[in-house]
Image 1 (cartoon, rainbow, N blue to C red):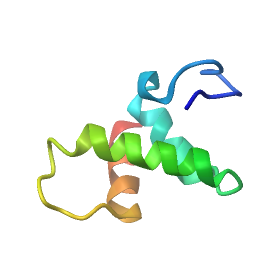
Image 2 (cartoon, helix red, strand yellow):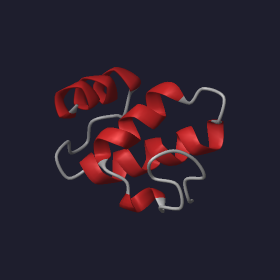
Image 3 (spheres, rainbow, N blue to C red):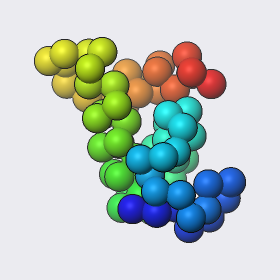
Image 4 (tube, helix red, strand yellow):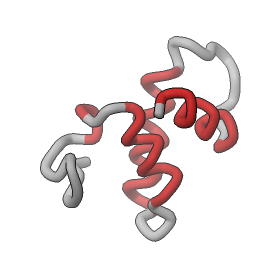
Length: 68
């Protein structure tokens, strides 16, 4: 999926910095496809660090705030 707006317009979601993916996930309630793509990309990137733990919005928020 490619981003069609903002600073990363035209970039593939796999190329976007993790902090911006966190922002997309937290703030794009009106674009569920993009929000889900951001969630999947974040989960893929952080899965090496959090083995076996379920993905949830609160953990993502803490991660995003740590990186921001």
